[in-house]
Amino acid sequence: SQANHRQRLGRAGRLRNGYCFSLFTRNRYHTLMRKSAVPEMLRESLTEICLYIKVRAIDAKRRGDEESFARGNPLVFLKKCIEPPSSSAIKGALLTLRDIGALDTMFDVTPLGTHLSELPVDVRIGKMLIYASIFCCLDPVLTIAAALTFKSPF
Image (cartoon, rainbow, N blue to C red; front, side, top):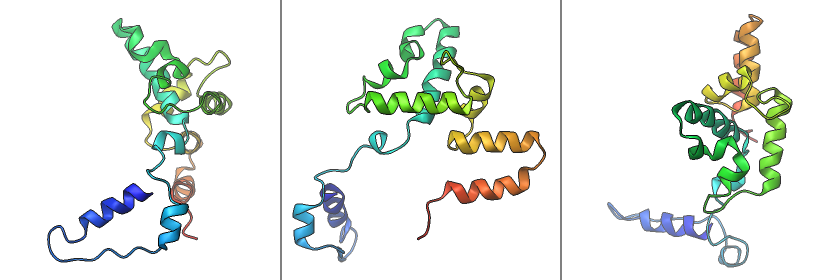
C-alpha cells in the first residue's frame, strides 16, 4: 500500500545515511496501489476468532459477565469492530467450525472446539494434530502440518 511505502521511506536514513529502493513504477504507485492496507480481519479467515469468541463467552458466563462477549454471538461481537467483516464471512466461518466439529448443530462449542481454541494453529490443522495424537501417528502428521502452515515458496 502507499502507506506502507511511505513508512519504508521514513525508515531509510533514520539512523544513518541510507536509500529506499522501490520495485514498482510511479504509475503503478499512483494507479494500482491502495492508499492504506486492508485490515487483517478482512483478509484472514475468521474461524479462529469466532471459536475464540464462543469459548471465551463460556468463561465469561461462568464469571457472571455474559455481556462481555455478546453472549457468544460472533455476529454481534464482531459488528462492534471499527471495520467489521461481512456477515457472510462470519457465517461462513461458523459453518466451517460446525463442519470441522468444533461447534455442534446448535453452534455451541464441543469438547473438540475447546481443545482447538487452545492451539495456536488453524483449526483444520489443529484437528489433524489432535487426531494424529489419538491414533499414535503424530510424527508424520507434524511434518505435514508444518508444510501446510507456511505459504508456498513459489
